[in-house]
Length: 103
Image (cartoon, rainbow, N blue to C red; front, side, top):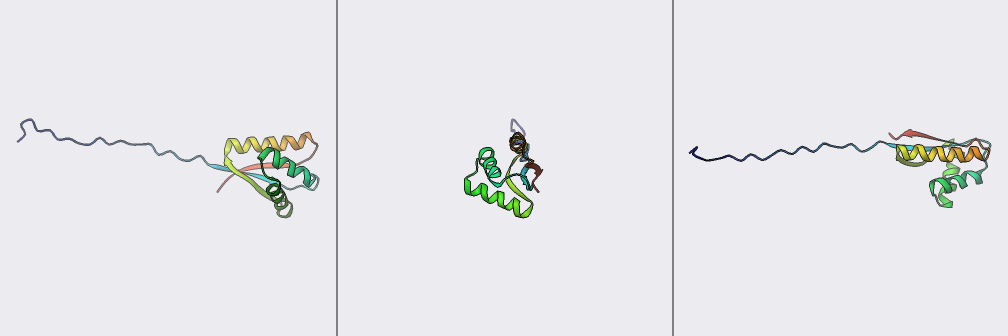
């Protein structure tokens, strides 16, 4: 029965599996010179935090030495950290924000 019989085979469609971009943490590093009010102001201005949230993040850094501010994509994390650190430098404070990959 091979007269004109055709066998249909389904096409296999391969979709490349895209990996999610790696997330990065923006970390606030405590110092002994920057006033608490200024740190709260920077967190509110750069990271769009509420007053209470920014105060809590600042106090965590004050007590523990560092505090995670936000976790986001690498380019956003580096931009926000640089913007916040530059704002502090302009005001004459050694406030530091760092980025590192999330585990």
